[in-house]
Amino acid sequence: MSKGHLVEVTREDLVGEYIGQTAIKTRKVIEKAKGGVLFIDEAYSLARGTDTQDYGREAIDTLVKCMEEYRGNLVIILAGYTYEMNSFINVNSGLNSRFAKKITFPDYSDAELLEIAKWMLIKQGFTITIETERAIAFAINQRNIKGDNTSGNGRLVRNVIEEAIRKQSQRLIDSGDKENYHQLLPADFGFIKEQVNIYDLLNNVIGHQ
Image 1 (cartoon, rainbow, N blue to C red):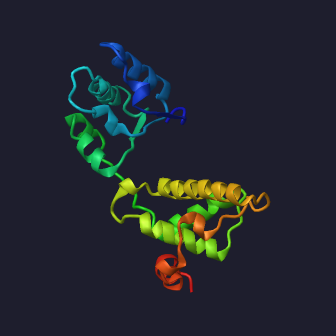
Image 2 (cartoon, rainbow, N blue to C red):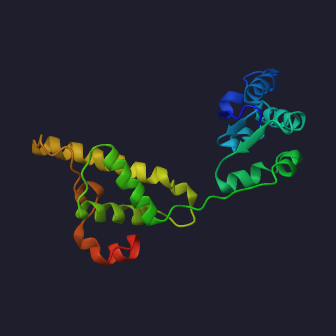
């Protein structure tokens, strides 16, 4: 690439509200990205529905045309959930032929999600005890549905943590505790010890000995 820069956009950056706006808007984005990489997140939203007032398909047609015009000086990456992208890529025959390279990223394992959770918590200034780590592992294991990317992967971890922090805040308010704001307890993650053999959970979910 002649420049090597990155331009990241979504549907809103490409699609206009009125007839004729979308092609112009999309071309401006492409001109900005020319010489580098254009990354379109949630690209399948460009093919949203069949409403004649939806101009997403005009953006797709413009992208396909410009890919040929700027061949050799523009990289376009389309990103999105696997199922939706498989349908989207067939909306325009030019898409499937021009995007020959498809990469599927596997879901994170429970162990990897736990490491992400620990990193997020440490970054926010929380201390993590082994009991809290076990509670996080339990919460992740209960909510991470294998093979179902709608569970959110990394977003799932963020949701689990934010819910725990809200529960902690209420707990501290109710108890009048003003000192332990940096600690999250197993109960903040909805963990009840009697529900599960925690040592089996550690061995099976996160591989601790």
